[in-house]
Image (cartoon, rainbow, N blue to C red):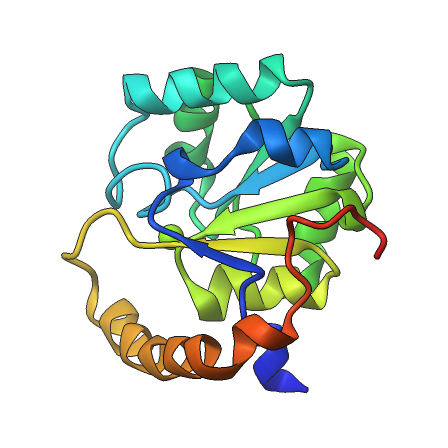
Length: 178
Ligand SMILES: [Mg+2]
């Protein structure tokens, strides 16, 4: 059902709040990240916090890939700063880019998790690819008009998610393959 493909497995305040140790312990091997409004404000360069976050994740043995609909000039400098694989022009929410990103990380979708701030882009596409998802709150409230309109639709999805979804979706804090 389409609604279920729009629900994240978890909804947290920030990508910086995720318990990556726990994810690693549960068998997650790769993390896909959206950049804009997930890791930094829209268009901003990598911060020291982002650099340290990726160091910590890599130390846990997890692979990372930045999956962005933005182009190489935006994505590559960020990826270089955090020392991550990256996939620009990913055409989210089409599944192809997510699959390609898993190939880059050499992970199976079932042992991969995506962290992003947009339901209709990040979450929808990952769910369709069999990748578990964490939705986070956007870092910066000032957004382009097409994103603002999507946020209004997201509000309804999040309402439904709060009312019904949390009982239905498979929580990520379960061992994989269950
Ligand atoms: Mg984003």
